[in-house]
Image (cartoon, rainbow, N blue to C red; front, side, top):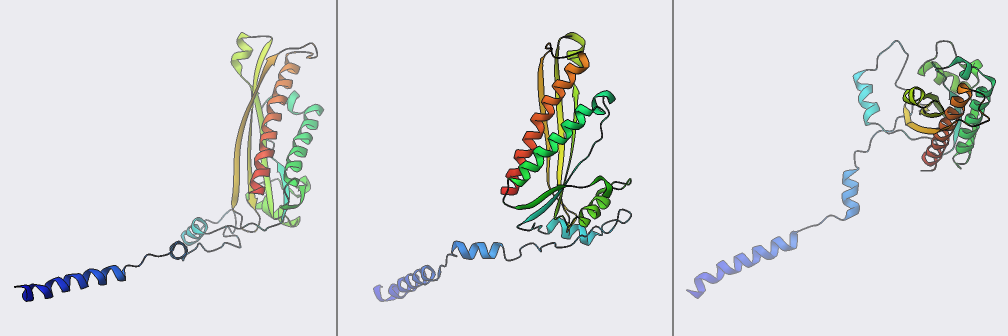
Length: 238
């Protein structure tokens, strides 16, 4: 009996030893290499040909699956888009034009604070066509040899319930939409939407209700533009 069962035990033992010895665990480096072996193809030129044409299915897949890499050093053009529908006295005043210039300076200062930007400049209005769209704006930025184009829009209004129930008090809100366009590929690489509020009471320096509301709007917009500057600086740094 002993001599008949011994070969079976030896066979099982040999099988176990063989299976243990053949077990192989991949190193973390090998696992990562296997995972990234089909890295996304870099996109280096635009796949958007013109406003009239549609993007082919193949190009849609390339854009969605591709990788956009911005240059290490960036030349940035900046354009503020104005689309106000509010008080014309407020938006057309010299005071507000001065305020817009201050907003622009805040954005430029934030962008220049990054070691990544070589220069930051306004996109001249002379280069902006009447038919303003993403294609014509991209072409305008090309004429400046800009790598990226920052577009942003500032709007604000007064909460109506404060006008109805609290004559000497008010509350304003501001909204900013911003996006960064990669000029080489025509792809939007960064977007932000920021909201801010400001509230308060009339003071002696407010010459009237419009002046009071203007002050609140300026305060709300100032908060939003400062926030945008910080987020832009963080994006360029990261």
